[in-house]
Each structure stands twice: as structure tokens, then as C-alpha cells.
Image 1 (spheres, rainbow, N blue to C red):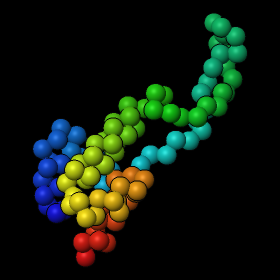
Image 2: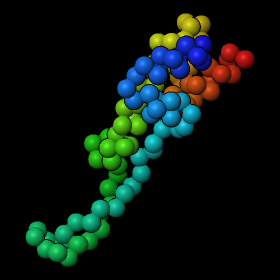
Image 3: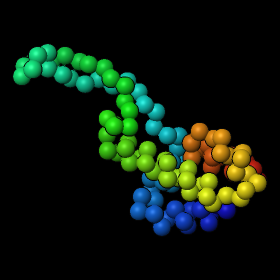
Image 4: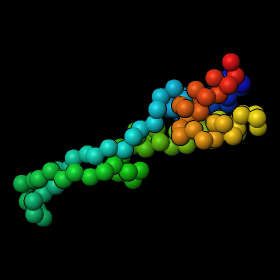
Length: 105
């Protein structure tokens, strides 16, 4: 089952990121700081805190989140029906991969 899924992943354009998602937990949104002008047009800035979300993270993290979704889809379509219900409850691809490894031992 592993080799079949990995071979399929290798056909995807972002296969490195998808494989990364299988072995690593997903990015967790955190609080971040951003410098903003005190007044419009001012060169003096202050720090503003904001919560990361899908729209405001870096392109690298954006790509990783997209690959995470793709890796979950690949796993769910590539596993047998008898273990689908067990891994469908997993929160991310990394946890799914670990659960399948335990079930297939």
C-alpha cells in the first residue's frame, strides 16, 4: 500500500511537499507581528499583532497547506474501505499515515 500511494504521489507536480506532509504535522496558525505606520503616510511605525490565516501566510506555508489537503485526499482515495472509517477521523495526513502504518503491521 505504501509503495502504491508513494508512486501516485510522485506523479503530482508538488510531490515533495505532499511527501513532507505525510511525515510532518501541518503548519499551525500563530499570532504574528506586523509593523504598521502610526498615521497614514508616517515613517514612524508601531507593532500590530494578528492571527495568521490561509489568506495572510507566506507563499511557502500556503503551498504546504495546499499539499496537506492533497495528501489527505490521496490517502483517503488510496486505502481500502475497511480502514477508511478509522483514518477518516484523523486531523491531518501525518496522523493518517501513522494510523495506516499501525493498522497494516
